[in-house]
Length: 245
Image (spheres, rainbow, N blue to C red):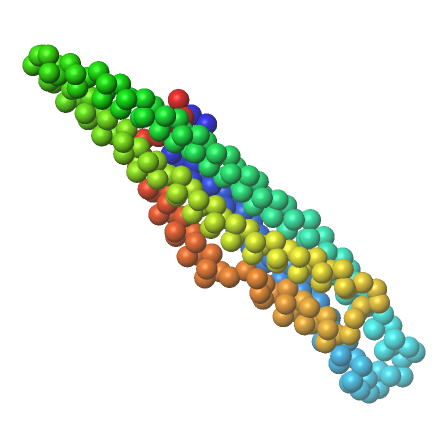
């Protein structure tokens, strides 16, 4: 990583792409859940409604019911197949956390190295350059130049506030990842609970139409706030000319 200034921006873009990918999978599961809801409604009508003259057809109610249940089981299987795709997104989030940790370690290492250089330079400056100034005007401009360097080095921690910014990035990223980890666990629990025989229609509707589609642990408003804060951090980092070499 030769130029690390752009890393926070890359991190944010990757995070946004992963969120969009999750939302795309969720929208696809919405279609399946709508299909399940429609089948469930038909089953309720079949159970409570009157077939009128159709009841004269042999076992028509039973045959319709069996077909609807089969359609529901097929739809549930399709929904369960979305789980590995959700898991992939959470895995991507975790990879981002890992990269962020490595980025933070690089920044801290650079800060430590810079502080050591600064301390050594100041020691040399105090012990040698100031003494030379007393021996002739020739060194005046050189000393003024050195003073500028010393000022830069003594302010290294301010320039390397990136380390603090990275801490903020880590906290923000972890908050988002936690949301999606919790939501994945909810979806996994729902899929584990919905096995043959299928639960009552009211339970199925609550699991899917209400809980699955609502995604209670994903706070979209908070995510937008975090993304905006991360953009601000990325801009601050991009303004610093920091190289690892």
